[in-house]
Image (cartoon, rainbow over all chains, first blue to last red):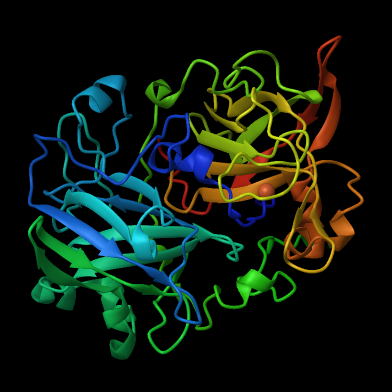
Length: 214
Length: 228
Ligand SMILES: [Fe+2]
């Protein structure tokens, strides 16, 4: 089969905010997604996810964009097209996006629900097969990062520290040398706002996060 | 024998572009293809589009038309087997004709345009086509090195169907004299740089209205399921 060369990646640069995350940064333009993935009726355990992106000198990166993509509380990824009604009813999609430039300390914070253990081969009305995204994978959130100084997307995953048994059986985690697995595991945090998880993403250094090549 | 080099993306570390030095991974990436090969992306619909999101000459007007050269930028999004990708979300952002971004952190001493924001988004149609009207962006200086200037460019964010069809890139204009001096453009493998440059299209140019540029976008097609 004939193949075409892909379009090369280039950096997102420092000035994405008024397009990709306009509402968060206060620009007069809509956003397709933000830091809140849930509505009042979203089923599942409500959690927040916080973290920072740290560069090779240990400085938090204040101009990164972070996207998350996760299954719902039953472990199904949303595959049906998103409609206006979904927006109106705050239907859970599982996609979040924010920039690290609006919170002190360049912290990111998503409000979401804890994803279920990923299922496969499951058919539900309005949704097609959730995909054999590692059937039986431990609950996790896919993370994609873009920033000035990064010429390509960086892919990683967030797993949950309190899912030790499921993490033990996760075939992607199993591929990672034991001493680096912890870089993907968010620690549980209790706060007045409820249960949450924290994960710092280290671009370099002893704690360098495991990034994926797709 | 014809051998085509498919290695098109810049390396993570490209020291001439100084910000990569402390922001690029130093350890080998984990190859996890089989774990993510069936992961689809959310399918956005018309509900995320505003009325003039495909027309940056109109979507931020306050008291007149934006200043600068009106252009059309259009093309197709496909996977690397040549299959057109419909319903792909294409988001763009750019400087105005004077080379000034509206972003609050931008300090370049060039005028803002009260009638130009520089943000747009569209969904590709059933044949993978998209089109924007906009103003040709100006060049602007940056701090990477002494007398550093970025070539004219439009930033693109493309959200395809599969998890690995997520592309952020920049579209450049033909014949820009700054190509040779721009470490971001130069970070791209030599053979692949042409893929970042739009083609001037007389065919799509609209008489008495706007010059047209064609920019086709090819996403990873490695995991395309044959049955759908
Ligand atoms: Fe730029």
